[in-house]
Image (cartoon, rainbow, N blue to C red; front, top):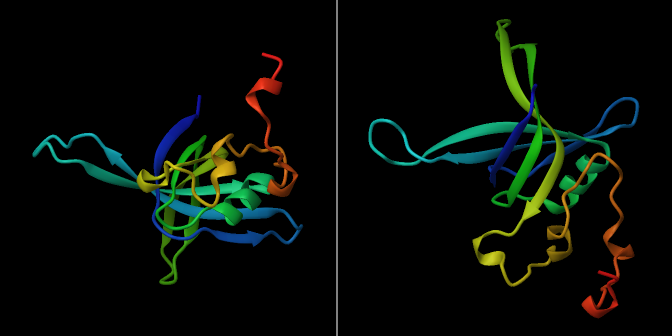
Length: 142
């Protein structure tokens, strides 16, 4: 089983591109704190490259920016590439199936993208924000 769940903050703005066949792709990196290191009881940080595709990529490109907190669910994928100096290298990417946009520390009262906190971005195409309408809790059937 290849499944990973991470919560962290973006280290840079996302990079959105489109493949030659027109499929949207978004790349970003997140910093994830580890609880304690063995030597000094200080938090350590790990950095992960994240790749999203299609509707998730489009949503991430529109909403995310450096410093934004996200929860990522997906799988780990290894890729090989050739560096500029001609050496062969290997990189580890998290291919995200879902990305949930989380409120940051100062974002609790509702920021400009508050509607995106309600549900995670999934592989299926997300509804555009302009189609969302407020619903009164009294109108819910449950």
